[in-house]
Image 1 (cartoon, protein in one colour):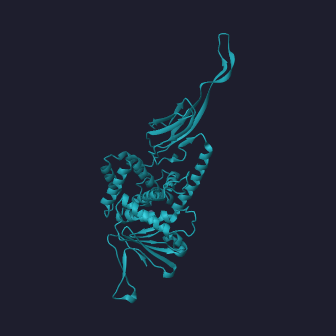
Image 2: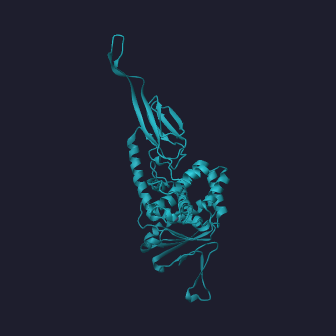
Image 3: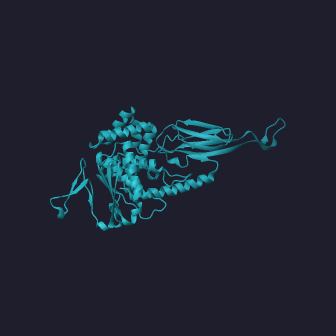
Length: 419
Ligand SMILES: [Zn+2]
């Protein structure tokens, strides 16, 4: 029997197989039973936690992967929050006919299905789901915010944690030397499909539809927390999360608890950030609208003392000139940096205040490459894919389309796979 907490048989009634379950500081119990022959059972100890795996025969090859992911989650949660305090964790791989029970969380028990066929590790499914459901031990289990009224405090923080743990352990999805897909890519795609439907403050049962629930409860919070980290810096963000989870464990925090603690720890007023990203639905959306090269010519019909004369058009110094137009497509305004390299190999960093709808920068030489937000101050930007410009478009095209296809796939998997 897979279950929450520790189990023991009643010694007074050994033949009746009455299991006694015991767990401290939990708000729920769960258990699962199967005929023992169809369930693989393995047990590990890691960092003083007994981990029990119940796996399906066909999926048994995924067990080492699942175990690696759980270890990664235990490590990452100790870094960002506090060490997992329970002595046990049970991980259940549900059978095919019980798929609906997959990807669920209960105190000290999670269902984290693995898939029988995944030879190239493309899906990262046992890893992603295991880490995600484990993350719920904190936000659903110990902090236990109101999941109906503020689902982002549970699903959102858990999705953000999944991204952090996956990034730390596996770096990226679909890793290759040249091409990588960030571990928050599914959330990024999902958010930008329709970013302005519901604010994070919307009650879960009032969201427009299921898709908006997924976007608002899971996807947007991941990006908003990334955005907060980019603004405050990693050390401060770590301190905020540690303070929030430690102080609010067993206290059912609301979003104002998070804001209060984040402001106290960072020493910053987060009012504007809160209004823009938590209460609001406007987007931060800047793009490189176009990059142009113009030939500077002289010639054609010109005035002279003897009347108009025709001169053959020819290039004059400085010859070819470049220009870049940036555009603000969203309602939120923020200063943003543009980095450019010109044909004469010189480089420039320009800071636009981002207030107007667009701005054009002119250069004495054609633009060879350009990057908007080169320091990654705005990880929430939609234009993460084509915020860069390169005069060699072929390679960029390949990366662009493969990222788009892969991102769509990941988003879809997460959309149907995670609870
Ligand atoms: Zn979840």
